[in-house]
Length: 305
Image (cartoon, rainbow, N blue to C red; front, top):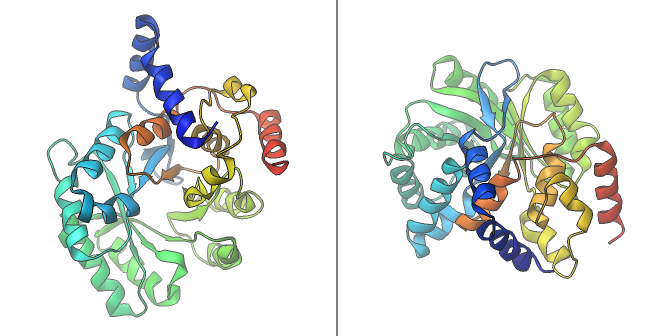
């Protein structure tokens, strides 16, 4: 079974549901996507979000439709977290127009990042996000990959103190930066960190996630599919029948449910430009999650490939 086939099977399964099953499925979605509280705060976030870099970048050639539909699908299934990346002003302006449309305005938790060296360059990136996203107050301002972190961290603290950022944090997306992230976590107290984690990229389990839980820090997960490498690795491998025991009907849900079973994280950022894939990802939040024995079985299965 290929990745594409498993997605088609998933959608066919939904279409084939009897009326009573479909009603139950709709009722489940209406009940709201499961959420997790941001440590140290009263606010909670739905557990499946969107990494928007690819779909926003592609909007320059594909138009606004795919981005708008992906965001609609996320919101329709109870999601709200949208992670962004500094892009060219035209793309960011397009993104800002869409997130401020009436059906999406006030329904999204939108992050931004600094990825340039130098205090003034970092401040300008935050100001640009405020202007182009139409948000005087940023939901979450982050330092991408710990870039010039000693310079930018005081800037983020100043933005938060001034009420221009609700939360602040830092990101990494490669295991080679984990030691640097761990060192930062031990000396600072961000509201959030962002790190890579998946069924096939599990290094964060050992030290980063336990430390974040110990320090009371929110965690956003990136690369749940290793930027597509995960699916390419599995394209000739059928989904094991026992995955149905915890409700996974595709390889995407197999990884997402493995990740969600770790209670140290707050939300997962799934990157897609396809509304059907966004729906499949969002549905991983519902239903059972694998227990410790099932997770060990999942790890052994992946390691044997």
